[in-house]
Length: 90
Image (cartoon, rainbow, N blue to C red):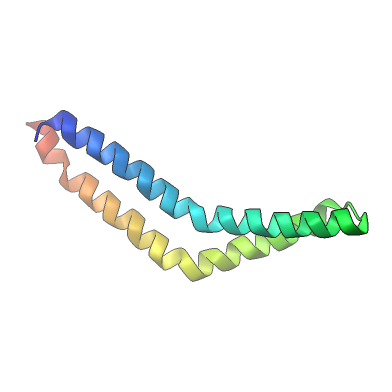
């Protein structure tokens, strides 16, 4: 396997790790924002803090719940990237 193949594989794997790491917090913010938006539309209450605070709490809660998994995923990718450096130097 040449150095170019390793780079392409690491770039592809990096995009997958990035997607998996950001999906839980962004998904939570999207879902909470959608629910709050529907409630605001139904009640005609348009206050910016009513959507910001619940999203913030939801994202923090998701990061507390999934932070270890996300951190492990990023650490494993970083370890593999560092171990691939000698193969790239050849």
